[in-house]
Image (cartoon, rainbow, N blue to C red; front, side, top):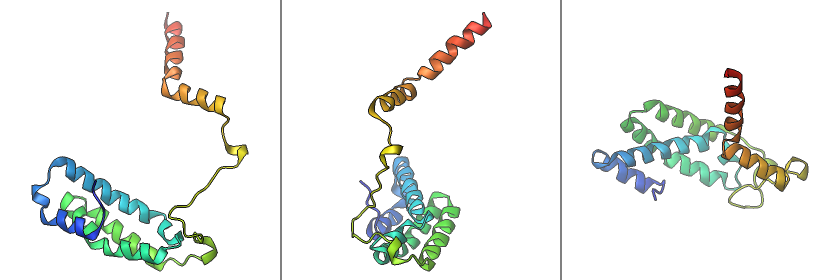
Length: 144
């Protein structure tokens, strides 16, 4: 619901003092998400790396301004450094996504995929807290 583009950022900056706490938190998440996209240099591996870099450069100053207004100037410094670093990156064309898909797709080989039954067991084991329940049973047995 909060597009990350130059117009939206300009609007947020202009009415920053009128925004509510939820919007502040949402803006902070968007700033951090923007930095996360720059962090691994991933935008330079895209078939559209030039356009993606241009978007990052357009969003740099609004991102820095919003980070400062939110009270996190170090995020603005990080965004600036990462944008400059991305601009200097040279990724060989064979390593870029050549088939013009919007996102990369990686499918794990069968040897690394979990079969359905063990996967279900793993989900149940983690999700229902069975581990904690069993551990507490054994720990209570030791105490008695």
